[in-house]
Image 1 (cartoon, rainbow, N blue to C red):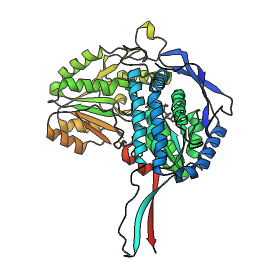
Image 2: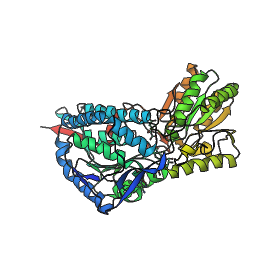
Image 3: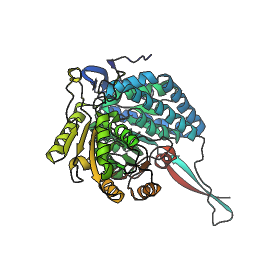
Image 4: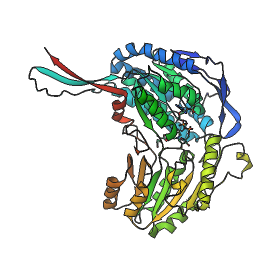
Amino acid sequence: MTTFQVEQTYSNYINGEWVKATTGETEPSINPANRKQVVGYVPTSGVEDLNQAVAAAKAAAKDWRRLTGAERGNYLFQAANVLERRADEVAEAMTREMGKTLPEAKGETMRGVAILRYYAGEGMRKTGDVIPSTDSEALMFTTRVPLGVVGVIAPWNFPVAIPIWKTAPALIYGNTVVLKPAQETAVTAAKIMECFEEAGIPAGVLNLVCGRGSVIGNALAEHPDVGGITFTGSNEVGKRVGAAALARGAKYQLEMGGKNPIIIAADADLDLAVEATISGGLKSTGQKCTATSKVIIERKVYDVFKEKLLSQIQEIRLGDGMASGSWMGPCANEGQLNTVLSYIQKGQDEGAVLLAGGKRPDDPGLAEGFYVQPTVFEGVESHMSIAREEIFGPVLALMPVDSLEEAIEVANDTDYGLSASIYTQNVGAMLSFIRDMDAGLVRINAETAGVELQAPFGGMKMSSSHSREQGQAAIEFFTAIKTVFVKS
Ligand SMILES: NC(=O)C1=CN([C@@H]2O[C@H](COP(=O)(O)OP(=O)(O)OC[C@H]3O[C@@H](n4cnc5c(N)ncnc54)[C@H](OP(=O)(O)O)[C@@H]3O)[C@@H](O)[C@H]2O)C=CC1
Ligand SMILES: O=C(O)CCC(=O)C(=O)O
């Protein structure tokens, strides 16, 4: 039984206190399933609030980094336990704020719990290597030190998992954190912060500042006391954040968009391939950077695959993510809905053929939400916008090919390189795909989405700044290596 209450007013969390924004302003966070429902009121902070948070994080950094990894890990274990206990409430906040279905939100929240436990354990693992010196009387080894204050700029599509997979490694490796969540999901972010507060995290170690990205996110990226910035979101903003960090010599890490292909080889199990295409492309209303977007099918099985896909897509039930029968919720906000509709229009204008969906649902019960039908195009060519640009919506582009070689060429014909999948039973085809596909995640007989917290995550080409998040890869961003040479 959840205890989530709508229409509460939330504050920033700075130096261990819940404080109102110095601007005195808040704005409503509305429910994308019904624009008339206010989920909560969240602060619209100014740069002064951000400065206070960075100052608190800077002041807390000295004591925090001096704790042992095991001591820092204990705080993360505690936060995991609290989040687990409050999972229903947090998941409900997420569903009401950004629309994904409650089972998906619950799954994501439990993933947050698992991430916290994983990084809590990292506090006990090695942080360096002994390297033989050319001097026989010396000891040479590496150790790792934190960056200091880390700024986390998070998006709305995974409002629990992404802030936690950035914050937890930042903290375990000895950094203090200022989190700027997407304003769209600031209520969910406040819930996460409540869990850390209940876990007893020391004042200033983790701070939350809500407000516009152009104000708070920008000031965080430019702040001289922030040693590292980790960002997930659009390419446009990511590039700006990276440039701001680079200009002042801070470390940065950017995870941005994707244009993820699935290849259906002629020997694929078509039922499983259809299932993966639907799940990878349409779950969370297609709002994942790993979402399937280009569906590249060997011509021999094109018609059969298409019929199976279309018949299953007709069964998808759109609805409020809080309702038990809903399979797909609304887009997270009106801007996102308009983006998706404009890509659907562009697809038609550029000559693709609409096979399913393509508009808002007719059901009057959904009229106040930002819903769009699951949409399928065929006749899609690589030069078209819907084959090149990230849509971040439930839109699939079917592209027939004559061979596996052509399939990989079409799959690679994009500026992005985040995730890619193939359905085949042929080991040779699998190996060619693993070798030739330019993507940070290559998945065989599995959908493009679905990241495992203990494995490195990140993309090639325009999808990321070429660094990796999650798993043990996180240590590379959140620490700096010191090479130590000791001689008596
Ligand atoms: N996981 C991913 O790869 C994601 C990709 N996207 C892509 O981005 C598109 C637009 O989504 P949108 O939410 O606008 O993504 P943004 O890139 O605008 O937002 C991501 C984060 O950056 C913040 N931000 C916005 N402007 C600035 C700035 N000038 N400086 C620093 N931080 C800033 C946002 O704050 P605020 O929300 O308060 O503006 C949010 O916290 C989507 O259609 C999708 O294509 C979006 C989200 C996630
Ligand atoms: O597929 C996933 O589980 C993660 C996707 C993701 O990181 C994103 O959309 O930002």
